Image 1: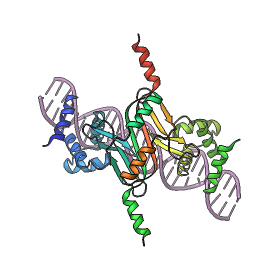
Image 2: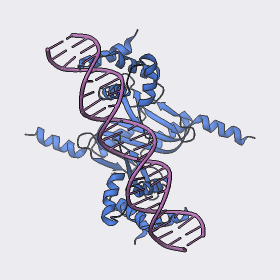
Image 3: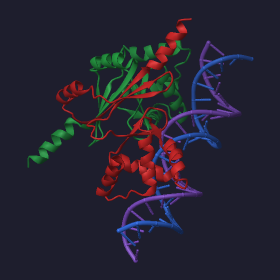
Image 4: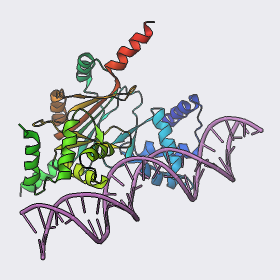
Amino acid sequence: MEGRIDRIKKQLHSASYKLTPQREATVAVLLEHEEDHLSAEDVYLLVKDKAPEIGLATVYRTLELLTELKIVDKINFGDGVSRFDLRQEGAAHFHHHLVCIECGAVDEIQEDLLEDVEAVVEKRWNFIIKDHRLTFHGICWRCHDKNDENNGE
Amino acid sequence: MEGRIDRIKKQLHSASYKLTPQREATVAVLLEHEEDHLSAEDVYLLVKDKAPEIGLATVYRTLELLTELKIVDKINFGDGVSRFDLRQEGAAHFHHHLVCIECGAVDEIQEDLLEDVEAVVEKRWNFIIKDHRLTFHGICWRCHDKNDENNGE
DNA sequence: TTGCCTGCAAAACCTTTGCAAGTGT
DNA sequence: ACACTTGCAAAGGTTTTGCAGGCAA
């Protein structure tokens, strides 16, 4: 039932890369934090628990490799760092994000929602869409609820 | 008829900032390159033509200020630099981008296109949308046409 | 004068790279 | 051996910050 990491291993092998202990530890961290949007530094610190001797450069190289193989997506929310997100297996498209401008939380939307918009863009702008990035900035339900409570006093 | 820069001046003043010659030159560059997506360095080099004594730090500080006042939007296409885009006056939402993965060109979509999607997101995720970022990655019409030509030989 | 603004240089940051050593086949 | 991978340290590139001087009200 350890399928996910085995499949990633195969993806690496079929591209002539090895799943070294360092790479495995990095992938494990990403799997354990699928909900989060870790920066390279975040991943590095977490990987150090499993493989204390690992270097930051190796983490960067591994994340770059995984990005190349489309196992993870590199994203950027405008703070100075890149963040890395494991792709959903079999997902045709990159998922979307809800960034809360009050508490900073980042939630994910797995649904596509963009089929209609993409159809319009492809036709009207004559643009062949390969991927997309969609992020909404606003107030999340948690802050929303919190504000309601405070107003109710 | 010099309305645009005058209005920006007022926006600065009403937030207790001055429109200094350096800031004016920076805004002028942004106005002249509304179609482009200039990096801070790009802006710096262009501003130097108008105000050769300006420092890079001032350009950064001005762009930061303009971002704060929502006169420009800071965007990031995943190459290591931030880019700055003048907001459309009166635009309720940030415009979208088409990034060509072949030639690197960035085209803009001014239409909203997202009304329906936003309605779904607000209702289903209980998220109050304040702004959005939407970027499509793919093949632009220019590269598309170019490829057709080459295949026709 | 006072407070904002500027230019310069230094610093801070994130990320990439060079290289010698290590690894598995 | 051989090719790939690693850790470390150094370098690279972008952005921010400290500070003394300048400017306008």
